[in-house]
Image (cartoon, rainbow, N blue to C red; front, side, top):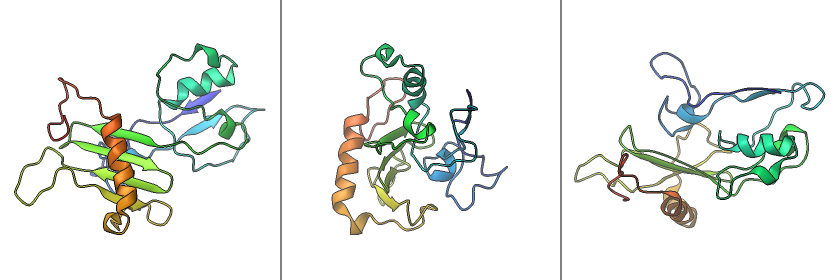
Length: 180
């Protein structure tokens, strides 16, 4: 099995991430969405595509699943097995995916079905800046993240706010003061 992927989107001054918004080290889709290519002759059908939201933390669970060693998964680990998708079988949608970066002004993002909530510039100061404001995008209809729907869907924003609070682990090395 050969797996090819990356950890970040393209650098905005060097590459174009269009139509996606943002660039390397941003949690907008242009900074976080990357290709994932898997070649496994006789197992993964060539030319197939999937829109399943995945992360690098899914690979330990996936590989252990593929070699039938799921019992070796450490307790409390993050990630899901995407083996069903790779093998052309039905895959349950993941409950959510969470990301945060303390750098670049502090950022959090949650993917929840078709929805994505994102906080940017959490460490920025200013009287007209709300460091905890969550922007909300419907990625099925707006992959470029151009229409913030937070005001129209406060119930979704609240679910995302709770996930952000539950998933964040304070770090003395990488503090995010507005939420620590």
